[in-house]
Length: 326
Image (cartoon, rainbow, N blue to C red; front, side, top):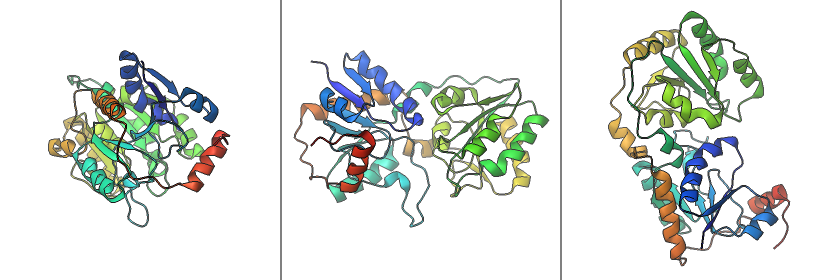
């Protein structure tokens, strides 16, 4: 009997995370539906719910599976807690992306005893692999990305610089901004004119990763996604410097370093770092996710500690979904 799966999403950036998984599910002859309202979900009765976001209604049936909307980044709350590792005790399974995140979530699983952890790789990156042979291009391409948080984002500061670079050099520019970015800043970038400029929506990023030679960014998990291609990344005034990237602190030096890195494609030795956060280059992370879920569904007694009621969160979700049946 075909299994029934549900994709529960709240942001557009979830689509490229789940599309590769959808392809594998359909290939195996199972059913999948995207986000539905409460009554529809209860009628559908999914065997598992896949969630790239942070929350999932406890009143949905099925295994609750966290597949993440980004790779682990260094973003931290003001209290020092890393956002990626906040546990809300709403999921049964965390499908982690590499050794580093797996180790941290396994420690959290021991602490809470209410969820399981399995390293699978990240489904969003499946279309990137196997990596294409890089050819020398006459015109180089730069991928610029920025996060939305005023605390981390440098999009506004970098706008005049990028505008000048577009006018000054014959490079292709692919620009993407976080879906939650201030609409005024988005409007600024979308208004840039030029045949060598393309504003990239969040559902298109993988396609333009492939076309780009280098990334310029601030503090965002998208830099880890891009770097899995073994292409150079320059960060500007990032929150936390890492060996993976070239961080530039002074705006006056950015043009020189960007051009030098772009022309030389000076890639830092990142193989060991890549193995830590996403070692999978076979394009089969979605298959590993589904294999894990199928295995757990065939052994339904997971012996997990009962999760807290999460009264406030579930009330908000019921209100948002307009679902009040118990």
